[in-house]
Image 1 (cartoon, helix red, strand yellow):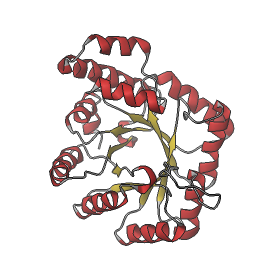
Image 2 (cartoon, rainbow, N blue to C red; image 1 turned 120 degrees about the horizontal axis):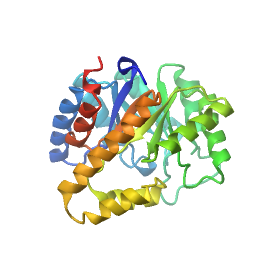
Image 3 (cartoon, helix red, strand yellow; image 1 turned 90 degrees about the horizontal axis):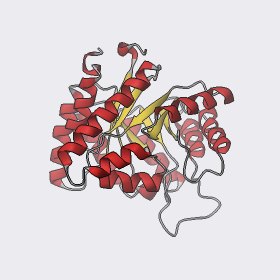
Length: 283
């Protein structure tokens, strides 16, 4: 069983696009900050399409006293643009980044354009030294574009060899996928901590659609159970709360180093799970 006081807890947001969304996120981040997370992360749209929103969200949260990590990918940006953004983050006291491959916007290509996460990690290390703690993405059920399981594990090792400090996984609902993944990482020599990504279940239709596109499996028995509730949001939420709480308990009982919650800019589902686990009293 992981020592509760040593567990890392983090929450992910997406940058809001409207004033109403910004006000909501201010309230949600305040509520979730009461759970004493180690940091919040803020996502970055395909091709850097939310770059300004991400930057503004991150810097506002930092000014409000929160520990925050922007997601970052090259997308369609050149090295000069990326370096300027990194320097701005440094100036604002940001010391953690989630470095991702990201998706290029349509029409962007060319051999000179860096797109892979290990290239981004190398670029950050070469230009910013050890200023940033670098997180990278991991896929216990393997990236949907990977050629083979072993290829994906080797690519992850490349990211760590380039200088990444730790990893955050895509969400999953089968703990055995994470445990097997960690065994394979250990065999190839990956020693850095890899934190499970956790997605609360509140809107099953949206979750099922997104899971099908990103390769995150919803176990058949759970999918059938959730489908049986139809549009009964209360039953979906209650079942999802029990399912995800049990998943987290299993992970922590088997020494997962912490949890990273995909909050979807909502406070209540994450708060209930964290309190079910007793993690709100870990410090």
